[in-house]
Image (cartoon, rainbow, N blue to C red; front, side):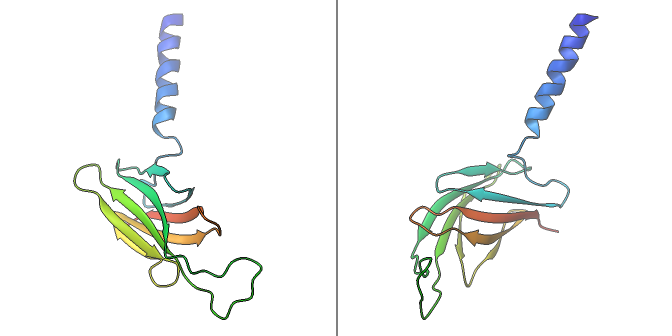
Length: 126
């Protein structure tokens, strides 16, 4: 009896690991994720999204008065479970929502600084 309990407890623990924070929405729901350059997240369909970094950042620095707010190019790589990876290039002003695979990904914020964190909203495409 105690052996059966130990096996059931182990299976329960393993199933909890499989649905941890790296899993994306599988029911069409949304989730938010904040990543630093170099970090990646796994989505529910086993695809992965990696934050490469920021290029062409002309945003106005914090606590500075600027004539124009500026913008930044934010670069990601989407790797489906099977197939070739593709570049996803967001722009904080012109391209904040992109589609990759079966996912709609929105850049909702980009922190200031040299290696800024990017916050995304990720949802299964209907």
